[in-house]
Image 1 (cartoon, helix red, strand yellow):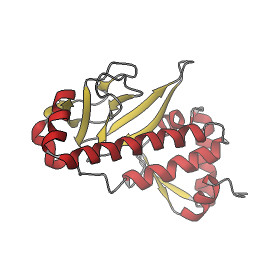
Image 2 (image 1 turned 45 degrees about the horizontal axis):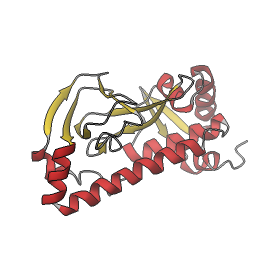
Image 3 (image 1 turned 180 degrees about the vertical axis):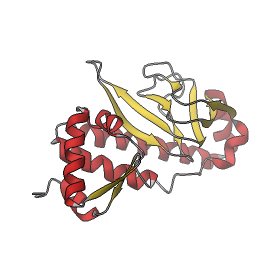
Image 4 (image 1 turned 90 degrees about the vertical axis):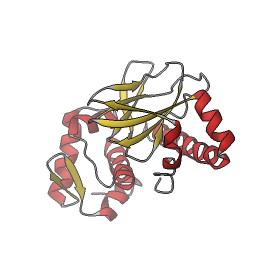
Length: 207
């Protein structure tokens, strides 16, 4: 993901700047797409609502990334995007995207690479849906740290990542803390033993 961050910066002058307060929905799953977004400052929680009505967090978008790429040219948004803190966001309409790609061919490649990355992330999520809860937690923890540098999720939000109860998440977090794999600092989970967490994520023996 690092090779995608801030690549869209040269095209911000084409977009419309908006300031969102905390916990504001930027776009809704199923809504007809009007364009794409770029996060200049803040954080976006991307969620997926299942047919059964269960909501799962599938990604946390850091500054410097596009999001909502699937909602272009009227296609429905596959997820919902919500701010987790006050955020500065640029919006690029369908017509604006067409204009940028016409004037700046490199922009089309950046958009395509970002879209592919998001679909790959969604595929990884689906591939782990039936994995044991502890394995899922380890996988998402590593993913969040790799993409954002840390995990600022509380355990309630983390439970929505996994699709399980906060009690279950807390038991595993306390187990890892007791074994020295992680430590807790305010809302953040700090990994002390990447090798052990990676073993759990890969379904290796973690007794």
